[in-house]
Amino acid sequence: MSIFSIPRVSEAQVLGGRLFSTSPKAAAQTFSYATPTEYEIAEITVSGSQFYDGNSMINISGLQVGDKIKVPGDMIASAIRKIMDQGILEEVEIYATKTEGTKIWLSIILKERPRLYAIQYTGVRKGEQESLNEKVKTYKGKIITETLRKNLELAIRKFYQEKGRLNIKTKSVIKTDTLRGNNATLMVNVVKGEKVKVNKIFLTGIEPEARNLILRKIKNTKQRRF
Image 1 (cartoon, one colour):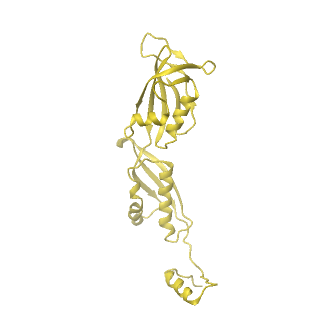
Image 2 (cartoon, one colour; image 1 turned 180 degrees about the vertical axis):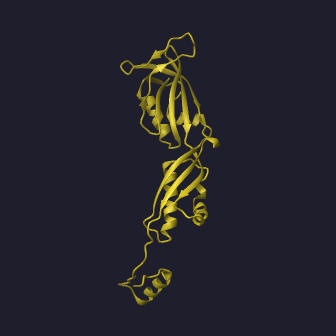
Image 3 (cartoon, rainbow, N blue to C red; image 1 turned 90 degrees about the horizontal axis):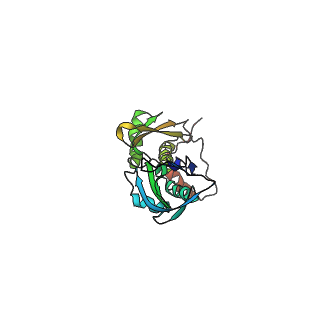
């Protein structure tokens, strides 16, 4: 039974305190916050990760074999927070798999965030999708974090803002793909908004030579005629 589990967030949540021994004859032991027990860590194992080294995760957790911890206690909660703060995992659980006297065996179970396999758009013309895919191709294969989603949406908005769509809005949703392992498709809804047109350009407080230079630089910015 897990001591702590964190799904999607960085704050520890107690799911239960029951420890089941590996021996089928041993009785289950219940951990209580009212009477925490001190143990010495005898072993730490890591599973559930395809791309990350288990020893690295143990180092990040701050837990070490030989450490004395209280169960339940703050050190387990802190270990989970440290791992989750890396921003690369969907979920972390720490299990107590065994106790013998004052020693405890811990198992860290990781669930990785999905990686970006494909991007699908709504509100985008077919002819624009190829150009958009070229803009965001570097995101393919990377872990889908909140930062990745924000940066990808920003790249899409910049693409349209350069075309005069200054009021563009984007929203992305992750769609898991069970047929492709831990891969996912990012569904991006694009609301372009109206094009913003320049009514008139005013240049004041500059020398004539500088004025001509500026006008040459913005020669492709067309004024709206009434």
